[in-house]
Image (cartoon, rainbow, N blue to C red; front, side, top):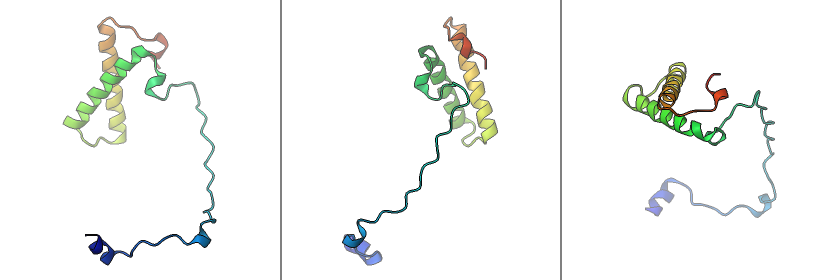
Length: 106
């Protein structure tokens, strides 16, 4: 099998020692974009009471994608995800749980 591979491709060669000290020109990374506000960006940056709400919304959205629209466009997908989050928050509050008040409305 390896010989068949070598028949189609060249055999591997060791690197040239005279080229080892050379490095490609480094492209500097652009500076990080500062956040415009203090909006949380990751799951763990939200308070614990939001973890259940976010997890339920994710499950609902994944069920929507799997069952109804496998490839939603950007606008429709964001709108459906927002609705899933709002529904999960409403169910969470109806069950008597609380969430951080400043995060309920944006």
